[in-house]
Image 1 (cartoon, helix red, strand yellow):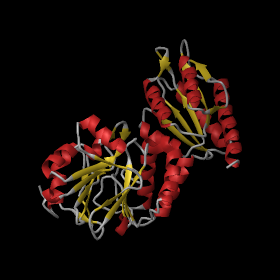
Image 2 (image 1 turned 90 degrees about the vertical axis):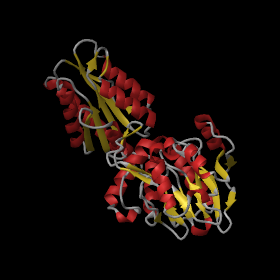
Image 3 (image 1 turned 60 degrees about the horizontal axis):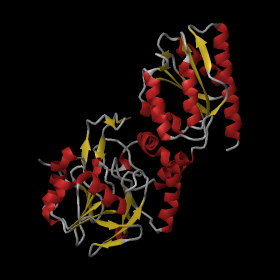
Image 4 (image 1 turned 180 degrees about the vertical axis):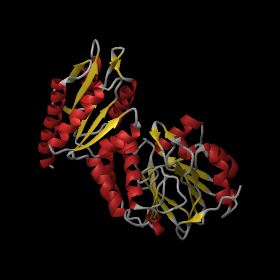
Length: 400
């Protein structure tokens, strides 16, 4: 296999892999594939930062071999034990036979529990690993997004290995952010944040404080997915701050599915009421969109209005799926309501309202239910609901 490393700084090479074909990442639709980034630090003590997903082991080794014999690697650092970064770690350890392997305290436990790896040395925030002519400093970033996650900072080059932070699922030949259109970067970074990091907004805000307190001031940020940052740090830091705070905007997401168009008619009437009330609206039918697209739209929304027909006394399956997903992502600071149509019992709108309540969504009204096909009065009620939600959105947004 011919796979060449790419030099990204004076002493560091990218030796990762590009996965052009992956389209699902534990429920998150990766329409543009992904990369699994690993980095080779050519210090006196040659160090490999992270590995890659198991099936790509040979490509990783080939990239390393384009620079050095892999058996010359002295140290391996595992910043994150999830299998897209450590899937081939046991095989790499066997092939390379490094002097030492390092991970966070929780990382040592995870790698032992999941893979049976023993003898890994634990490092904690503030610890420095001397590589001879260079130094790696560590900062634990627990729950961003696993308990074991940590940053490694190459002090002399001011290069931050940020594992899953500031990354994105994007397969690309370009290795640097500034080689791609900013619109693509902002969208993919936002989609990644919404689907991976949204539940951890408070931890993200604390992370910025911890980075500043640790004196970490990078000129390069090398994540484990997607291109590498060598400029525009203020842009991505600003976006992460905004996304973490989740301050409500005057945008409403109307999310629904439908069997015979009755719930769809309600959704469109609610849309019209929202627009008339001055809200920006995104209507999403689950027959046409993926749950991860919904997460992206909800990330910067102020209202979530959800509708479902009743099927076998329950939510329509696509709505059960997406609402379970959103509940786990824990979006904040939303207003909204539930609606839906039914033939007999009409349980679905009530079930949606219960989920919204669990999500701490401020509900503007009781669930709006329509039996069979909505008539003019029912559509007027849906329109009025949209108008009321828009009015409440204005109040909420004016307080920001």
